[in-house]
Length: 340
Image (cartoon, rainbow, N blue to C red):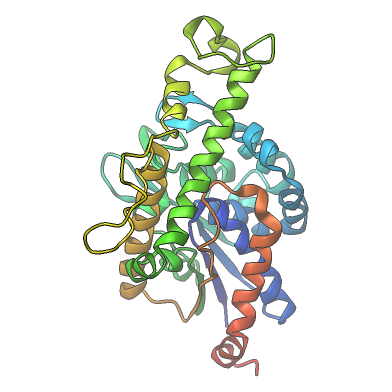
């Protein structure tokens, strides 16, 4: 019996995949084929290369400012960050070059931006496949691949169960990172979700402040202007700082008081809040639809409401949440796989 593992999208929350895999291995479950979407493809590539322990050690060591440096925050064509160093790290340390070299069959999924079609990678360059699969709209630039502009696979297939079956899996274990962002959860926990979006906004606020610091000789950052930016060296522009500044949205009068229905009015969203919140909702809804049409045999859903999409520096906590999500349903997993 071939067991497949489908790793879903979720930005920083994807480090929970590492904990899921660790817990499954501790249960004696051997995964035969792997598929991944977005961050799931990043972790999946490392796992299929036999280099997950090295990836785990690295991500657990990351600080918030190291994440900022790795992301390459700037104003790029089609995205707020370049992510070049992130993918260079994968290429140099955590993955083989091609699919053919991997220890396990692996597939990654992306989306054709202009046709809306799902694009599947099962051969060729692993790094190019992961770059395309991770190209979160608005965050990372789209990837030009064979005359097609590709973006995050989560737009059409957030948890690629079908790809595991295409690789020959008889039983598919799927990991959905967006369970806490379904509509019913959003309604039940509005404060938690407001705080979640604020974390993403805060990441870019800190990035803005650091950018200003870098480009001011005396250490006290002034209002950014085109003259104090070195665009040739750092790919940073005045427009970038203006976008990052938009995270500082002033609250309208009365935003912190109760409405006529005695419900607190949510704070006004920044551009970053709106983007991250919309992506969370989109992912949750598309995931729900896809899993209903092609359900996995076993569904693992870590509880990640407390983690923002850019909190890559909280890997240790996320890994533990991934492990806990497996432990919660360990009896069901054993029963489904006949290993009880």
